[in-house]
Amino acid sequence: MSTSVALEAARRRTFAIISHPDAGKTTLTENLLLAGGAIRAAGAVRARGENRRTRSDWMKIERERGISVSASVMTFDHEGLMFNLLDTPGHEDFSEDTYRTLTAADAAVMVLDAAKGIEPQTLKLFEVCRLRDIPIVTFINKMDREAQDPIALLDEISSKLALDPAPLYWPAGSGGRFKGMLDLRGQKFIPFGKNREEGHPDPVAFNSNAIVTHLDPDEQGELEEASMLVQEASKPFDVQSFIEGHMTPVVFGSALRHFGVDELLATIAAYAPAPKPRAAEKGGAETHVAPGDPEVSGFVFKVQANMDPNHRDRIAFFKLTSGKFTRGMKLKTFSTGVRGETPSKQMSVNAPIMFFASDRELAEEAYAGDVIGIPNHGVLRVGESLSETGTLRFAGLPNFAPEILQRVRVKDPLKAKHLKKALEGLAEEGVTQLFRPDIGSDFIVGAVGQLQFEVMADRLSNEYQLDVIFEASPYAEARWLTGATADLEDFHSKHRTAMATDIDNDTVFLAKSAWEIGYLGERFPKVAFHRSKERS
Ligand code: GDP
Image 1 (cartoon, rainbow, N blue to C red):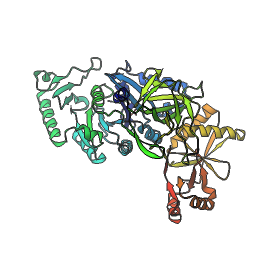
Image 2 (image 1 turned 60 degrees about the vertical axis):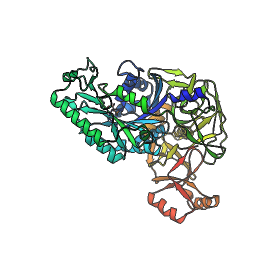
Image 3 (image 1 turned 90 degrees about the horizontal axis):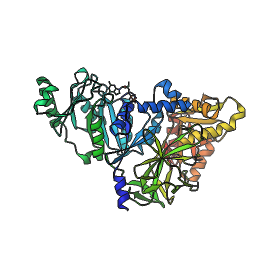
Image 4 (image 1 turned 90 degrees about the vertical axis):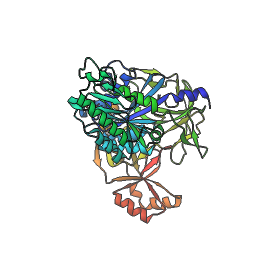
């Protein structure tokens, strides 16, 4: 292990924001970038988005629906730390993409709307974080609007998420009566400036005379009482418990008014963990790859195609797990496919990209925790492990069983071949899943949500000039099969019409209902039906 490599990794903070749509993730992202000095004026994130939209037609959906469907990363250097903020799409149809992005996060910020508390999508995303032991910082947003009782919000975190909330600050009022918040550890009062132009006044000691300019005696009494009560009722913040995923530090604020955002960033800087060692497989044995290990390694958690329509390039988002990456370095993929028959591919990474908020730059070097974009022509797939020796394989990037399966046809039959290539491209990106039934010439496309089909139709039309029709398919579920060869062949021969292969050529059974899977599971006990497949 190299000390300088380990030290560089130790100053990385790679995190994602999870929230229910409309809780304020975009606004908070922008304000975190502002707090981190990455952008100068609010509005830049959206402006960048607009710019992207005008360049990429399929983003029309984003504009029409007012939702964000593209995920990316933003890197900024602040007070000696390198922050990598992973942007996750908020709409639930894109949860699969979000899940994958979370595999690259070392911490998460959970944004709650103070009036709404924990919403369905928050809960779903929280569960993924828990599954992966990702520590969570809570930001209770929109305090400038009428909020729920903050004690009730903490109770909800505790009861719905089985997570101990540890408030680091306590708010004084909300909505029109929102006055600011008390730093519970420093007994400093941070006033909320009502006047947008003037910003927020400087913090004052809570027990000093200066407090009277911000709080009247009743408000002071209330805040003192509430803060004492909450400190008695909640466990004190404990970093270890946070890292282990049992406790969440809570910060209150208003992303829109840039209040509480500096405190949130400081909380992330102080407590969010640097990248941890990651479980991997090497030569058939289990191992752990540490951030300070000399060999460069990592995995691809997202592939985005046609970010620039002038080039048919794809960008693979690669999260480094160890080593010091330098531009021009040769990396090898671990062989793909469940059966592992695809040989390892080697590539020289000559034009790696770092995504800074205002600009994209060539990455001259990168360390564990960093995310770099590797342009390629479809060689790199989601879930792929890359390393200098090509012998490492990181586990844990799932491919979820799709919840909707549809048949896809191209209107012009002469373009059938073209369709195959386009569908394969989108499947390699992880946008949708593609199944080729053993019998017949149709393609079955699987997605987690309906919106994915719309995105797909839009992209096929704009990027590949293909007009397609989606039709109902007789299938409701897809399952990957494993078992002894003889048992699999037996099953196969009896269900030929429902057998298909995925893009890795792995066998998939297309079932008409969940009930059918249960029934066949009993009849073929030696065949295992998997809802997901871990990609190598
Ligand atoms: P996202 O869907 O989670 O990305 O949410 P956005 O950041 O787009 O915010 C949704 C809406 O809430 C927008 O109209 C924002 O202006 C508004 N919003 C976000 N943060 C705040 C806040 O702190 N206070 C108020 N009053 N509105 C906010």
